[in-house]
Image (cartoon, rainbow, N blue to C red; front, top):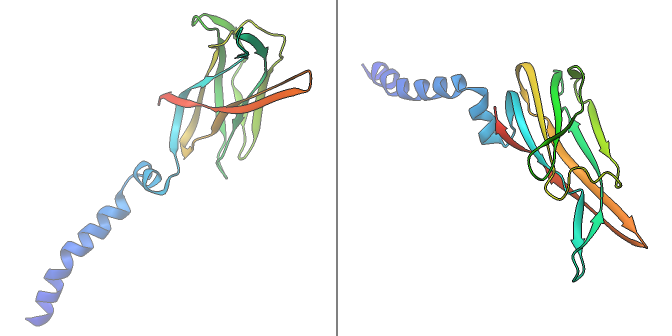
Length: 163
């Protein structure tokens, strides 16, 4: 009888452990800080210029969009990279066909300082997908500029807007 009570008392603990094991990868990712996904649409702010001085003079910046596959074993497929201007108008498509990035591989798009087509509120929309749930890539822009001995640089992280 004593062993039966111990067994019955252990059932809730076993069920809790089983539930924890069966929890989806996404829940584990949220708890661990890792972001897992099968694909996303990512908005990435671009600052092709910043304003300086009392006259709000534009300081032109070069921009590099960086897409980094953070998964150790799976590839991602970047299906589109589109560049929009301050008004939300599509300026250009950067991919003719999908781009495969292997495990830990990276790719980039560079926009020169002299390219003012995007304006202050430009952005990239990047879409990617994978065959299974994997580590989400890091997608961000690095802006840098230097004029007359003055330089500025900063990073703008991408923001998932649709999974």
